[in-house]
Image (tube, chains in turn brown, purple):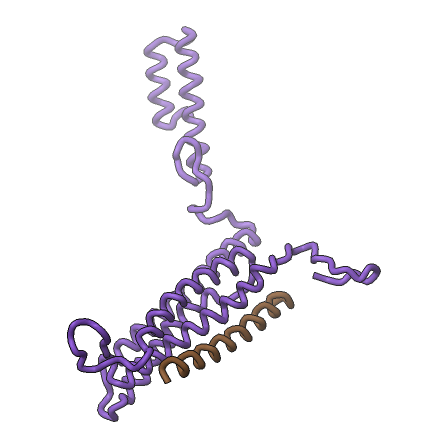
Length: 32
Length: 231
């Protein structure tokens, strides 16, 4: 895997982690 | 992208075009959005399964099992927005050549929902016996999650086989070879033989038209060519 591809995958993995955290917050806020 | 040591300016790498900034930002934001939507659907589904796996809201009848507050909106909104963002993410990453997780979105969705069915099927919220209906649903969802993974592996293997044949000096597979003009297929010997028969017939017809051979000689020679004798 090239450094460019690895940087892309890491950036998106971080984004996916943020998305999961946000989804948890939304469900807690809406459905309690 | 690299930095020129003499000028200090950023220079794009010559071997690979730079990804447009808008598409780069969109890819990261959409990856987060798809993960958020799958998480919302996953957690909202668990809220429904906590109360037995089915609920209803609205309509002319009084529902026996009302839905938890906000859960219907989360499910519907999560599915619709999630699908829209998934398609957008796949388009952005594929069109810009960004290595991404588009291939993983379908397995992630069905794997997550299948896990809910298995989890609640093995230990239902009322503490009773395993719920076989949910377990069957879980297995079906897991199979649906694994199917595109298998197809993806096959898609990766096919071009690899073609590269190996080329590297070994072997001809490409028959379906990859161009068809010949006379429609004889991709087999070079068969195509060459058919072409030589056509040439021989054309030469014979020219001799016949020019009066060099009689009708009887022409017919006899034509039969020999067609039977393979003079081709």
